[in-house]
Image 1 (cartoon, helix red, strand yellow):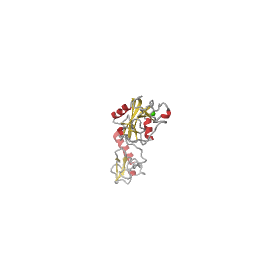
Image 2 (cartoon, helix red, strand yellow; image 1 turned 30 degrees about the vertical axis):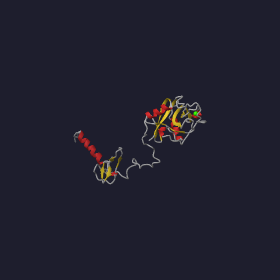
Image 3 (cartoon, protein in one colour; image 1 turned 90 degrees about the vertical axis):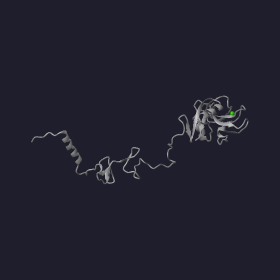
Image 4 (tube, helix red, strand yellow; image 1 turned 180 degrees about the vertical axis):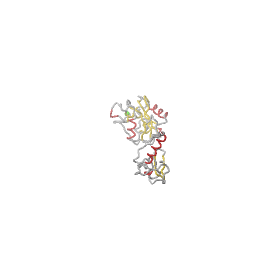
Length: 231
Ligand SMILES: [Ca+2]
């Protein structure tokens, strides 16, 4: 018998037919719209939905699920408790600022008098910093330039010769609830120490780092100032 040459198309058809029949010991799996009882009844990539094989539903994040609702996979976990959820909210501060407890902080480079510092903060839509806790004091200290001996904070003497201090008039002159004086301060040593600086990393005495000292508001100019913006 002479073999009749077959066209490529005919050969491909035979191959596809053989593949589609498969092993008779395995039931044939359904294509789209074929009746089904479970996902296993459908060809790979399809799911059994409402009794027929169908393409999976696609959700906005690109994930897939057979049906929306309680049976959704773990890629849609229930919201975590507020206390344990990490804070992923965007910072309210600018890139040049640091963020602590909802407040924004900006360090101005010196040399600056206290008046320069107050004006510099206003120019940035901020106030010279008022520090109300040890945590806030630490945040301000860590934001100072490494080379700073001292930086202005917003505490001022109530009046010449007074032993009382209050926060800058930008805050309405409120009394401080937290203080962090350096040893022996405030001493009003020169009689005109009506403003206050925080010791920086390069403070002359390491013990004065992050501590407060009353000083003249104008002389000498200081290495930095810290501004704060409230929410
Ligand atoms: Ca002093």
